[in-house]
Length: 357
Image (tube, rainbow, N blue to C red; front, top):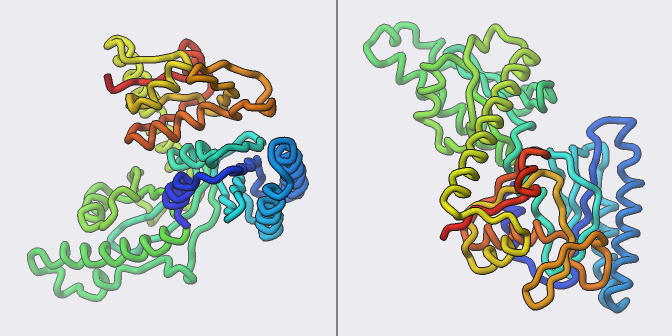
């Protein structure tokens, strides 16, 4: 299921106990040999915590779901993180292309902030080359090639419309129409692959052809950026190096823009930095944008809407992570959540909220 749809469906579930098991995983052997062991340890931790907070008859159905889901995981296909969500009625495993912190969370809903963060990450992507001759599709991770998709997926795809109508191309407008027909077919093929593995797409080609492609593309939001040059002459690893450099440029641009927005909100008196104030503003529907450092988690005790920060997330009555709770409520009321690198919000104590009023 597409990550965005998975996030949406998980956010609708509220049935105690909801167990979120989050695990940092590895893509390659021998590192991934430790992943099933680490998962088993987290599952044991989840069971022990549930037994201290719930009656056994409420714990057993959840553990059955968790154990069945864990047995079905192929750790040879792990990415950078794994989330296992379970309650008495269901269990779902989500592979994530972002590094996460090992933890177990018990709550009335699922801890989905790492899914939100994964949706903002573009470190795992496709490169689609577009030219008048042929197109290739390359799966990349950071600056490395994961796979260049082949005949099984219909690539490389040759522009037969263009190459078999040399006599027609001499006619005014025909060459452009043939190119657009090819690019339209290409877009449809990429959409089919994207439905199975929904990664963002970087376009590679000259400006004219890329612009033509974006004109005919049905889902322009899939295509997040472009790299220029002659893709027919580039090897796959050269393209991933260019693509990741562009992704880093866009990420830095977004981060600078976010910090500028924070400063503007602060100048307008619409910025909150106290966790308790942020929590209450979100509950009141006043949250416009929550900014939080990646990796910042904060256990709290909430009594009569008063938030007290705690160190031990497993203590009785303590909410494992109020940041996840705030993020959920912010999005529920139509707000936004922006994850920033560690250290970038130091002066705001790692989290701040821009309010609507």
